[in-house]
Image 1 (cartoon, rainbow, N blue to C red):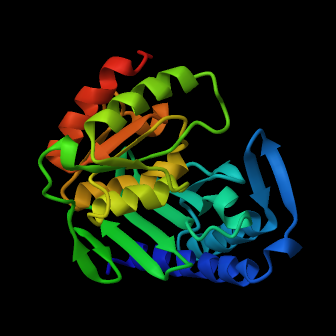
Image 2 (image 1 turned 45 degrees about the vertical axis):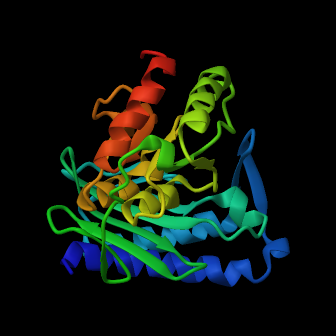
Length: 262
């Protein structure tokens, strides 16, 4: 395992320990509403700080882009961090949430960790060296037809201005696939595509920290990922579609006509 990935794994496990301790007594948590249907807990903040402490101890000159504390520093290397993707699930005791850490060097994602502390599942990837789940190599599925595919998604939950657009996509995918699942953690959904548990995924309204780790996992597992029009700027637009190569193409063809430009 590469030194930078080893450090990211250490940071993710440190955050996971904080999350698991807090999960034993969720009712004791202090919960704050950032905006409509967007919650933050002391666990998010403590887990994020633990991650940053570990990363900065090894790489003090690297920049940080984190969900709770924002952007810090200026460097060719940026750590993109979501300390608890799926906070709403977490505060309801629904065990579908994850720590996501990715490293971007200039414009390329180079390292990725998505860690599910509830199941102790560790998804990792280094650019050019494949994707792994608990040290086992993972690949996207070989399923060839959308009608046989299981697709993950995320419903709009903060900003509902694009709800009609999303529902048009949902209608098309639901009628043309084997099923659609909404589990509540985009980072884990993307990891599940990489691991072959889902054949594809799409969502709108995401942030870079929701996608960065999962994106590299998918690419290293042989999949494809883009924005809803097939472009590469999904980290900026927050609109993403992913899947094995054949399902990706069919999913994109199904979604793109419903997606607004710009």
